[in-house]
Every structure is written in structure tokens, then in C-alpha cells.
Length: 267
Image (cartoon, rainbow, N blue to C red; front, top):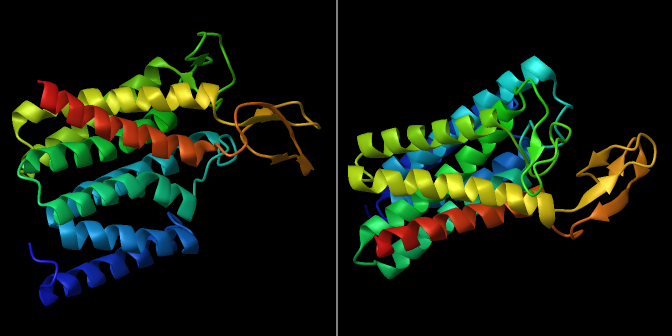
């Protein structure tokens, strides 16, 4: 696919314009989220190809549906993350996949499968983490913190549950099925993509439990990801202040992608 093909440029712009309008109308992205998504989508569409863009769109669409279902069942304020996604969420989930496509295009690496596997594992990690969160919140019991397996409140960074891992596996299977159907990855690569996505999702939980900043509300006493809670500045109890949920997502997606490439080379 040639980046300089005017037809491809036109297709990308029309497609992104339509998706942007739909995202705003359905309140999937806010305005800054839409602005952040356009260059990421444009890069993947024009440098990677329609098939790679479809995989990103699949993650985006199904994740949004899962979030809408969760909000309908347990409310929008239960989890302190964007349910109308912001530019931070878009960059956290899209920056690594876009960077992989750029690096593959610029270097013209002979082993194209490495670019595909790294990209699919990055999208797979983001998708697995999102479905693990949304489906995990429907777990009827309290989840457990990944570092010590103690029961914690739902929505606590680093919390895991059987439902969450079912969601992660489901995400991996969906990514593999569509990537195989679109001809991006052959069947031998699918176990690597699923494994890397689940490992990346688990790394996200470990980072959330250890280095992500957590605060205690001075009004209600709740442990929260937000610096401000109940209208007052909360006290930091653990983690690094500059590490929020979006930084954790970015790091985990990067790790999932690297693991998939390492596994492919090793195997």
C-alpha cells in the first residue's frame, strides 16, 4: 500500500470523518478524544492498511459497547475511569500500535510477521485489559489484589477476578479470529498473540497495584485514583504521582507488544 496514493488518502479522511461524527453523537469520545484519534487512525489506515485499521476499529467499537453495557448495569460513576473516552485514553491505547506501524513502514523490515504480531499483541493487550475491567466489574464477589490476593473494593487498581480473566481471554480470541480472517496473521501466530495479550493485561494489573498513584479521600475515606475526591484534594497513600491509569495502560501495551515479538523470535 502506497502512502502517497491519493485514493487511500481520501478513503482515510472520509472514514475517519464518519467515525468521528458517530463517536461524538453516541458519546463514545469527547471532542479532544476525537482530535487525538484522528492522527492515530490516519497513520494506521494509510501506512498499515485497511486490515490493520479494522483491527483497531474492532477494539474501539467492542470496547465502547462493553463500557456502555457496564454503565447501564452498574452506573457511570462506579469506576473512576473515562466512560466517555478522553484524549488521554485514546493516546494510552493507540500510541503503541501507531508507533509499530510507523516503525514497520520506515524500516521495511524483512520479517513482516513481526510487525503484524507486535501490532496485534498491542491491540490485544489494550482490548484484553478493557474487557477484563468491564466484565470483571460484573463479578458478584469482591475481586482480589493481584499482589497479595486480599479482597478489595471493585475498581481498585490491580484488582483481578475470574470474570476479568474470562474477559481477557475473550478479547484475545476475538483479535485472533479477526486477524486470521483478514489475513494479517497465520494460525501459528495466534497462540503467541493470545499469550502476550494476557501477559500484558496481567502486567497492567501488577503496575496498577504497585506503582500507580492511589489516594485516600479525606471526606469519605475511599481509596481512589483521583487527586481530588468529594470536592477535596485527597491524600496520596502509595505509588508515584506521575503514574496514572493511562501511563499504566501505555506501559502494559508496550510490554505486551515486546513480549509477542520476543516469543516469536524465540519460538
